[in-house]
Image (cartoon, one colour):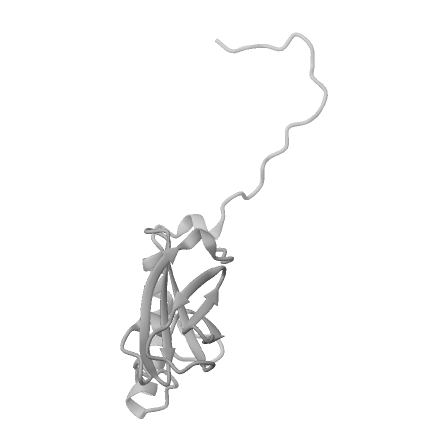
Length: 150
């Protein structure tokens, strides 16, 4: 049995057209990445990207280098951190975002480098103070006192 309309309705029914998106066909992004890097010939270079990259590495024709820490740093977060500079006052202290911090083993009135490493899980900011390429002090402060947005 079907349903019958007693009076015709105005308007027309339009077909939705092609609503299929190419990304719907990709079941897994890793499969697409593998296909692009290992099987598809690049339109500009005419080469498969993985083969081209491996050849560049063996020929020494790559700008990629192993990550190494610059001296004097021994901690990777000292490279990827927020940085500030402050001058040590007459009381061997610096002021950092309304925090007074004692800085030992540093000459008065000299600039120190401050590396700030936020830790959102602990809601703290790790402060590492450097002078003359040496780590002179480290401490953790509450994150809410800093004007840093993530």
